[in-house]
Image (cartoon, rainbow, N blue to C red; front, side, top):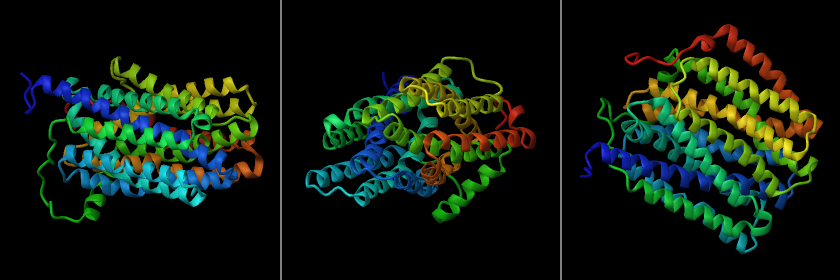
Length: 415
């Protein structure tokens, strides 16, 4: 019999519904990932500097609000909270579709759409990440690395499906794709409603302000000797690498390879598909013992990819390089997030994961903003060498001045 109160069978069903929710939500995000830069760079034909600003603004609200989203998630019943947020997320793409059908598409409207979707993401992502430990690990024998790897694999393979759907935007048009994006968000909300209730953990001081909760989460992250070096490395890597991915690739496809949404979609499919493949592969393997070393070695791949892109390979070579980069990124992402999942208590998990996401993605808006101007100054092929040079300095600094290279996976009972 299936019990709503936590039998193994119910836990397995919860895990399946959780994975359906991840897949459908990130399929919607994959459609947006192709459609939004295509609208800005191709439909509106904005210069690289304004593409960089648009990409920066598409991330900024999520990063600024994620800490408060984590504080909210630690206080509420997660299933209902997450379901409601995903239903609200249906509105921005439908509103943009209506405005485009009426002929009201401007740069400012595109940015408003991205701002609203990103703001909701700031509350959705911490809630979904916190739910992972409530659902997935119960049916995986408490194997945190495997649970995180499976979730990341589902997330990024879902995005690949979204890229496949959004890739033919120049032929299909934006409006049908925005409607499809809304439909996948409805599926995500409905699948979340199938999960078992996830009430908040009882803790002292529940009447504290959200700002106090945010401060407590940040302080806990920074005080943890395992999480802190990972956070520092991932933050500065985000400044150097996320701008390349979000700004350089669309401009490279438009100005160097004379491509359009299809080619942008193939690049994103290659990269995120690589993340999904390596993450799911890790979920079927024994846990990695030397987590810090795996993160640092994986980061070297991004620099190698950018150096090779500088030499102007054929477009199919760009796809292969993006795939290789994604395979390595899946290792660094799954291992860094597993470190936080292992370190966090139930009462602090959403806030710690939100703070870690802010740290790891916080460099993205700054990197996107700066790369737009670097491209305008020296062109996309030469611009990729700037973050490569800085990454060498970052890598050596992390190697010599932090314990990350020697860090191993936590043993049972370490926390």
